[in-house]
Structures are given as C-alpha cells and as structure tokens.
Length: 438
Image 1 (spheres, rainbow, N blue to C red):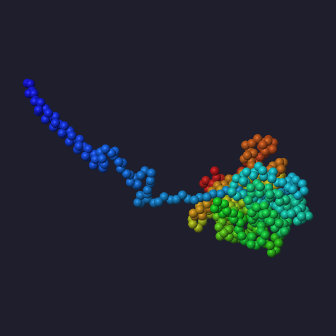
Image 2: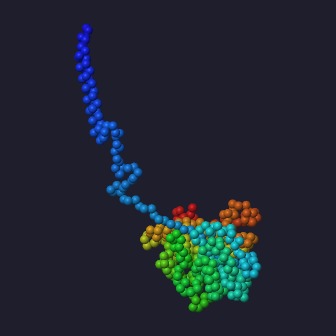
C-alpha cells in the first residue's frame, strides 16, 4: 500500500526540530568538558601535579624506615719495610770515587721504584756513619772482627732511593763507641732521615717516634738483644734500646703505651734478635712475639739473622670484643751487604725480602688495621755494584737484562722457591685474614 506523501510545511518542522536537538547535545558536551578540565574548552587539559612522595626521582623513608647510614670515612696508607743494610769493605771500596768521595747509588737504582711507590719506607741501618777520623781504623766493615763504619754517602743513597726512616738499635750501634753513635745520629738525621732505637739523650728515648700520613699515625720502635759485648756506657743507658736476649718485654710495652697515649694508631717494632744464618726463629722469640702482639704491637719486624725467616699471624681479643690482628716476620734477611757463602753456613745470605703493607683507618671510630700485605724476594748482585734485584722481575726477563748468565738466573729461580717456602712456612698465606692477601 502506498504511504501518504508529507507536505512541505511538515518536512521543514521536522528538520528544525532535529537541528535544535543536535545543538543542545553539543552544548551539553562542551559544558561538561569545561567543568572536567577546570578551564576553557579551547585550552588543552593541564597536567595533574605529582605529590613529592610520589616523584620517582625522590626516595623518602616511610614512617617506620630509618635514615640511611652515612658512608664511612676509611683512609689508607702504604708502608714498606726491609731488613739489614750493611756496608762491607768490598762495597766501600767499590763506591770509592777518590779522595773522600763515595757513591752507593748503583746499589739502589733498580729497587728504588719499589721504595718510592709507597707512603713511608723504613730499613735497619746496621753500620755506624761517623767520621773516619773518629778512629785510626777509618771506614771499616768486617775484617778481622765486625766493626762497621761506612761513609755517609751510604745514607745519602738511601735517602735518594726514597727511604724515610731507619731503625738504629742493633749489635753494631756502639762499634765506634758513644761518640760514634751520637755522630752517626747527627749525620743521618742531617740528611732528613728519621731515626729510632738509639738516642742523643734521655728525653729522646722517652719520646716515641710517630709518623703521620693521610690521618694515620704509625709509631716506630727499635730494640736490640746485643751490642757485641761492648757495654752501654754507665749513665748513658738511654743511648741504645738494649734488652739482653729479650729476657723481658716490659720496656717495650711501656714505650708502646706512651706511643698510644701520644696518638699512635698502629705500632711497628724492629726487633734485632735471633741466631745468624738459620731459617727458623728460636722458640723463645716466638713467645716474645706473641707477648708483644698481645700487648699491642701490630707489626713485629725482625732483623739480624741475615737470612729470611717465616712470618706468623697473631689474633688477640680486644676489650670491646673485637679481634686485633698482628703480624710477625722473624727475619727479613739482608737488604744489601757483601755476605756470600757458597754453602757454609748458607748461601741464603744473598737474599732478603721487602714487605709491603696497606694500613686502613676508620676516621670516625679510630679503628686501625692491616688491610693488605705482600712481599718481594730480593737478591744482591755482588758482581754488578751490589745492585738489589727484585726476583719477580728477574724471572720474567732475559738474563742479560739484569747482567746475569743463564746459569745465574736458574740459581735465582731455585733460590726464589726456597725462600718462598721459608717465608710461608708458618701459615702466612693460609692463616691470613680475609682480603689481606690478594
């Protein structure tokens, strides 16, 4: 059936009604948008600000979370120690340039970078450095009897190589008497070296030697068991720190206590002791080392046997419950000398060891500890102006680099192994604190 046709007037009415409805819907949508965005419908919507606690770049502790701990202020320094420094007559003659001129620098030119690389370096000066006119004998080594007096040029070369301190208490401290001892101190100190173990007066003996580096204070002590039967002059007992055969440690403990009161963070003691040419310390000396460690010594550095001996760790509980770690090296051997024995008593007198320590300190608590230890075995090349050679370098170079024959290098490879076994015999590696040995 056909639908009736609408009139033109009706169509116009419907079209107008439809347009009004569309307009009302558009207006309603715009008003809603304005209220939703808080601005004009022509403006882009503004970002909603993020509260500070929700900012991903800021981490704030919650109400129950503690403030983060500040980073500790841990400082470090490095210390190098060597054994006996002796000038025999052969060395003196080789160093003689004519008149009163001497040059010992060749002995140290290869080893000097090791010495210069640390913050403080120390050795045991086992010879007088007095004027040759102080005795009719002049400059001497070990000829008919041991009575050492070397040109001051020896200490000049040590200073140029980078040494800072010298332990002076040993069995040759009085080889030129009290006058020679005092002249030696004045001469060596005049070069800028700090000395300890022998003294010009009683006040010096009662004043601990403390060296500071990077906020860490290290006290240096030196004692000898012998003066080669030369009596310490009566009334001048202050001149040498001498304890016969170390039958007591009381004077050493008292000096350690003075050093602690004066601000020492760490104590290093040179002990001139033991039997010569043997690679094992006497049981009595191991007991003494334990007593010193328990009383507060951190480093016990042995000299006099002229061969290397083992190193040993000691662990002692502190009053606060913490554990303090000490290290004893019973002998560091010869750093430089002319000693050489093919077999009797031993060819090991040609060797020595350099000890390298890292010392750390917590600047807030004051706790100070040995945080690293390493050693280098050395050999004195007597045929090449007594140059001191680091054997770890010798083993990776061609023999000619160090003026050696192939046979000599092979002997040094074997000597390195022998000395390493001696040094580590008492558990130096196995018993070491974690992280101290790489």
